[in-house]
Length: 369
Ligand code: UD1
Picture (cartoon, rainbow, N blue to C red):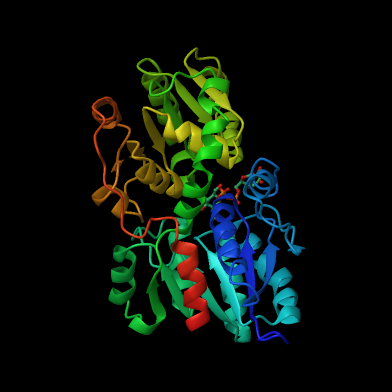
């Protein structure tokens, strides 16, 4: 507790998908006036303006109190560097709670540090499992949830995963999806920017693509197959593809950038900010992605989503949403189906508690823990 009796919270973010989650959580706590004293640490895992600063600007996130500037590296190097640089920061602030979001290396590294020095951790977006330990994020989720004291989950499947791992009920609270808080609050602003028109796209006629998972983009064989598949897709509908730095580097390394960039119906663009991503997703005929966040955003927006992965840690976006797993082999047929579902205006469902109020429940959970 602070001198004035407020709960001291240290938030840690590091990579792009963290920013739209921390924004509403910090706002939800600030709205409970005098109840929280908050501090924000950016590890610097993502550092390009287009991967980081634009989200702070668009979402009105207060500038971080500390930036650890760890930058890129191997998983071990990056994780170790975050731990080394984070330890003195958390020691100095001595929060009542560390609050971490999502499943990136920064999430896990900060949690490890807090656990070792006896600071309680709350994990927002706990309990998601792809059951695929080949994904770095799955390792991060397992470690973070094993160590965190309060597991704030987005959906009932996450609760079940935690129970199956033997987590006591007292540590689990289903709060809903904080990312949807951000989406609901910013949808109008996103529409006003008219991203499709600015990129020369006709609403409901194009496919919005994002791909950056190591399993898709890090081998020549896989990325070459994806590139040829995208050319195939673009013969049926224009493709807009904001390219993640990792993906751009690999396309370049494997000699695939030229052919894709010169295709008439493929728009390779720089990574877009939050508002334009939402604008492009909402007006798309279909989204093709390997992102976790877009699976959820398209579910809320009721836009058909094809996830180019063998599994998802967000199965609820399939059972109660507009998502579907696909493969390069099945993509042609799956795309036809998705375009037809969109044209027919199919009414997709949306999970409970994805209602724009999850962050209020996060704040309440911390006050009552
Ligand atoms: C990370 C997360 C992933 C998330 C993704 C969103 C982990 C393990 N992975 O993956 O879950 O979906 O962020 O983007 O935490 N780079 C830049 N500029 C930057 C950041 C990265 O050029 O601002 C390049 C570097 O070459 C770097 C590479 O991208 O080596 C990968 O970055 P890294 O943070 O290691 O992982 P992501 O692939 O971005």
